[in-house]
Image (tube, rainbow, N blue to C red):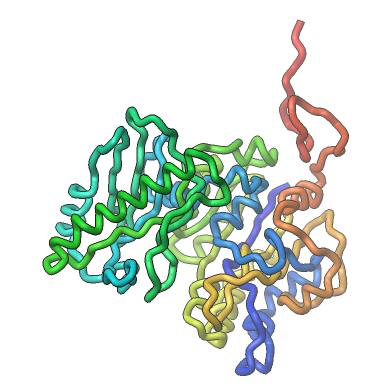
Length: 412
C-alpha cells in the first residue's frame, strides 16, 4: 500500500487574541483538511518531547526512524544539500561571514554581513584556508553570507571531535561564544574546542586589519559534525521512499538517508508528483506554513493554510494511506524560532481506527484517539499499511518492524 505524508512544516502554533483566541489552523477555513479528518484517526504528535523545540532536519531524522546518535548534524546535511563534497574524516562546521566590535569580547553587529562582494568572500576564504600544527583549515563559501569550515587532521597528534559547542549565539547583538566541549570532556573535545577558538581569534586578527575595506571581520561557527551515512531508509523501514520538496535542506536529508528526491516548482506540481510517483512512501513537504509563521503574523498564516487547503482536493480520493501532520510548531509571536508544542496528526486509510474528530487543528486533534511520538511514526505507518512484523520474530540479523520482502536464503 502506498503512503503519502503531507508535511505542513511548522503548522502547529499558539492561540492569539486577534484570532478570537484560536490558533491559525483553528481559525482558518480548511474544508478539505476537515473532510479528511472526518474519515481519519486523529491525534497529536510530539516528535521528541513536549516542550522540546526542534529544527526541521532533526525532526525529520526522528520521523524517518533514526536515533539521535545517528544524526550527523545540520552542517553535514546542509553541505550535502548544497552538493558539496564531504569527507568522512573531516570535521564540518556551518559558518557565517559576520561583523563584530571588540569590547570585552566580540560583540556581534551582523551575524550575516549583507554588503559583501563575491570578490571579498573569495579573498577571505583564501586567507583563512591554511595548514597549521598538523591540521588543515579550509573555508568554503556556499551562498550569500553562508559557508562551511572544514577541519582535517593531517599529522596532528589528537583526533578531532564533533562534541563541541557553537560560537554563534544565533541572535543579533550578543557576544561571540567561546567554543567549549559539549556534554563530553574527552581529550579530543577539549583539544578541538581549543584549536577552533585559536582559529577564530587568528581569523579576526587577520580580517580586522582590512576591516575598513571589507564588511566582514569574523567567522561564526555552529553545528559541528562528521559525515557518516546511516542505514538507508529502505533497509531501516522496508519501504522504497522519496521526498517531494523544494529546498537544499531536503536534498541533503534525502541524500544522507538514501531516499530519492524530487524538487517541485509549485504546489500543484507537488500534489501531482505525490499521486503519480511509484514509491511505497512519499514525503510531500511544504515550507509555506513555517515561512508564514516567521513573519509573526497569525492572520497571514491562517490565509496561507486556506490557500494550501484549496490545492489538496485531489488528495481526498487517494486510496492509500494519507497522513497529514507537521515536524514541529512554529509560533507567530515571541522570540522563539520554533517551539515545543505537540503538532496535529491525522491518518486516513483502509486499516485505520476512525474516531469522532471532525476538524483538523491542534485542539480538535487533541480530542482524538492517538498520542504519537516521532520515534513511532514509521512503526505507525507499517501497522496502518498492514505490513508490520510480529515483534518477537527474528527475520535476519537484526530486528525489523516490517514484514521483509527479501530474505537471506539458505542454500545447500
